[in-house]
Length: 155
Image 1 (cartoon, rainbow, N blue to C red):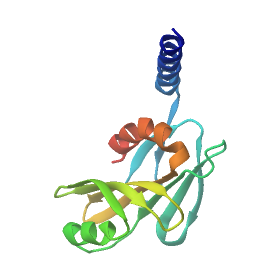
Image 2 (image 1 turned 30 degrees about the horizontal axis):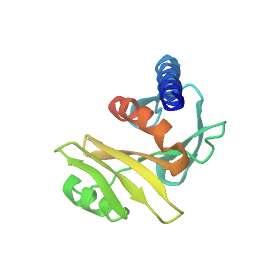
Image 3 (image 1 turned 30 degrees about the vertical axis):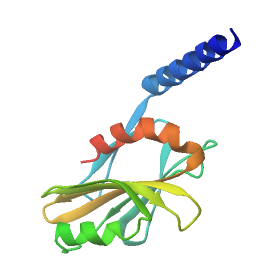
């Protein structure tokens, strides 16, 4: 009987977590200087531009160790070469996808402890815009509910 109650409670908690994520308000971020836009949950904010047109997006909660970067540039490297270069940053790749105008790589990056990474690079007019999301194991479940929408909105 205790197992049934435990499983029922766990199922209810997971369902409530799903409802919470589904009802979250999202904000659209559009670059003023570079040709990209995407959506993030309302608790994310834009930081200052750092070197090379990279903008950092951050969250003011217990997820302070989740980092979202968008890097824009005038790199004239062909997409397939850039794809291979970016793959070298991963210690383990769980997903890779290459098309003529974009690529996606996700997996693990162990240079700062065990971090998971999602990366989507979109070429527009020959120039790449790259979305990178880094998150630790403790935020994996939460981020994996957000990444499909964030990634799909990055254009």
